[in-house]
Image (cartoon, rainbow, N blue to C red; front, side):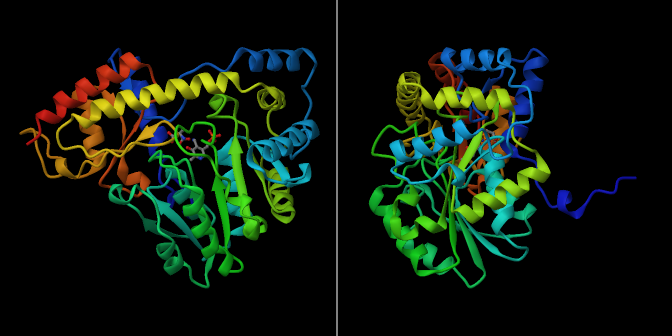
Length: 397
Ligand code: PMP
Ligand code: GLU
């Protein structure tokens, strides 16, 4: 007999991680799967960062670190926010956590009460929805489609805000669409927030370094809402450090203190060695980031060029991150004589089964008409993957 809490029962399994796990299992059985499911750079962590971690072990960074992170790391993050984002966060407004995912749940648990509404902009990153559920909040979804470049209009935001709204989840460059909001577009959204006291914004900027066109703008740089923005970032994507698990926030002091309190009971300070590695990452020259960004740009051009020629897919060219999200509506209701595709998730499973290519269905991103493809893999594999996808899709009519 199992006695699971209602809390756990209310959560969905993360579809990005589930798809990644499924491809690992199939690969272990010897099946030649090309994984375009999980969003993670295929690069190794740069050597100068690995060296810093090795040195940290030798220097005996083996004791409990301070709960909010080492002081010098918080200072380096404060300096990074100033230098790269034009944001003024003192080190005590910075909290280091076990990945951006952990930073996000800390903030949500700190300010969302059961019954509070949290506005989520679809297509959204899978975990936003379930983290809000975990906090007892009520997700309120506002949607954008490929036709409007997957971007929310200010009037949509305005009409979703009620007296129960506590938080808005904002993410640019976006996972899953790769879209980047312009300064003007963001300012209009910020003006809506400004009008509603007690409404806060999480600005998830984890893909800020992977941007091909335009500029990255931090939501907190609009000074009229600075004290209502929590900036979330981390080293996972920009420095190819997904496994090290370091994320961080810059936030109003009272929110930073709340996250510190939560961490003191949940996790304590996060892995000491990973923190030393993150410090080295932030103090680097940015050269390796540039190399990775250039590779992602080349791959974006490659995969978008190939997908354009696949019958029935509609594609918008993403300006950042390493995802592309084609609209697959044309394939819904189609069949290969054996399997009928009713949803995007079913299409993802069909492609896994028939093309041995792992993607993630759009349903978990609040965008059931789309399919997410992560192109953070080699050029050769991308070419082969699209070739296989094309053959499998051609069988559907
Ligand atoms: N936000 C977004 C939009 C992401 O795509 C990810 C990647 N998983 C995260 C946050 C969390 O990153 P991390 O791996 O540092 O937990
Ligand atoms: N952010 C990545 C993704 O969306 C990693 C997996 C996860 O943490 O959800 O695929």
